[in-house]
View (tube, rainbow, N blue to C red):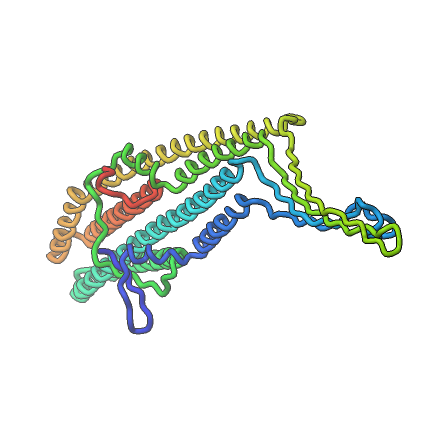
Length: 418
């Protein structure tokens, strides 16, 4: 297991890569995306509910004397008005709103998927840099041992001070490489901290990076990408939403209904003579329905709305096909890259790497018995150093390429994808 040590004062905890990946949920970009989901959920009842009813208050046929008892047509009015859309319109509006929520969720998953990839890439680069520092530090110690032995030979006149200068130069170059790797590691730690809430990172490697011998199937990866890749899932939902929008646009061909109910109260009219009773008047009730006439389609506006939604759906289908082609192409490129890295790694570790190590041991022994020169021995050590760095680079690139593949698929790689 590869672990990272998080130091706080004198105490620390070891976190694996999986532990660090769980710390991305507090990233501000994810917080923003969750808020977008909440906003989309809140909009569903806003767009799929009936409009508020209207209260009607008024008077009718009031004479200029403002008397309510002079004209039998004068009345006080109270009523209510409600607009009722054609059946199916609110249902499709709710469906469109629910698709908005699903799209927002897919976008959140895309951000999380990208952050997971970035964390993995930074993680494996940090491990690579630390291992490179350890390799260089080991070679610095080896140069120190040579310098001590060379100092003895100089004391006995078997070597010159110029050779000590050569070792000093090589040691300085190694220290510069350590400084560069330390700076690069610090930059990657910053990237890791950006993607997570992990602070004060110190890397501790419990096990070297490895490379898998088997490869993944492009068809299996694409099949899983169709299920898990957030961008493809978003496109699939957008296509379904476009279908609902077409249905909604077609419903505009049918009328909405505006229903109004009113109650009219009328006062009694005064009698024509003294002492005669007032003339009573009956209150009145009124109801009406107004219907728009959608078959009168001025300028073809309603037909154009349907055509627009159908064009949008065709565009989304084409975008999905294009995205699938791009993902397939990128997966294919990365699978080729993985195979290339495996071949190079196998070549280094099975033939070149062991032979160089054995030759270095041989040249060190020969130098100790004055059977070879210092320049030849140092040349072999530098060659071994470069090859060791190449192996570390291969392992790091392999893991980072796997992280890219997992990002394109949208989920962690499994055995059934091989």
